[in-house]
Image 1 (cartoon, rainbow, N blue to C red):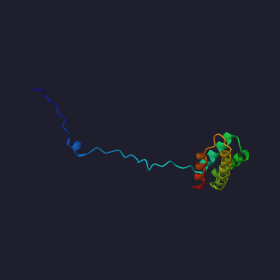
Image 2: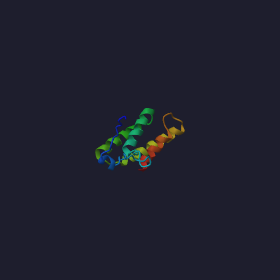
Image 3: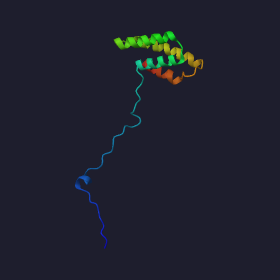
Image 4: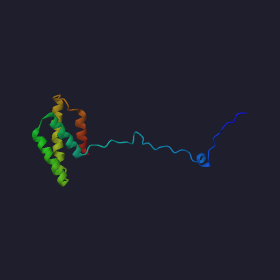
Length: 112
């Protein structure tokens, strides 16, 4: 007769079931929305990329520096509002690079 090896479980292995790894459900994971500072940075970079509204670019840059110095975001809200209006005009004119998603993301940051 041939020998057969059987593996026996120790008492600790048989008592403790394997724990499942906790994975977050897809519905609970949220993408962080843009902060007002990030939205202004995005608007400024897009204005520079399109090479339009140099005065608004300067105002945005100044307001970002001012915000970083004193933490008062009122200027950022005003400049972002102006930027959204410019991007909406450019989107109507079919300017390449100005998307509806850009405008909605900036608008969400303005309302948040």
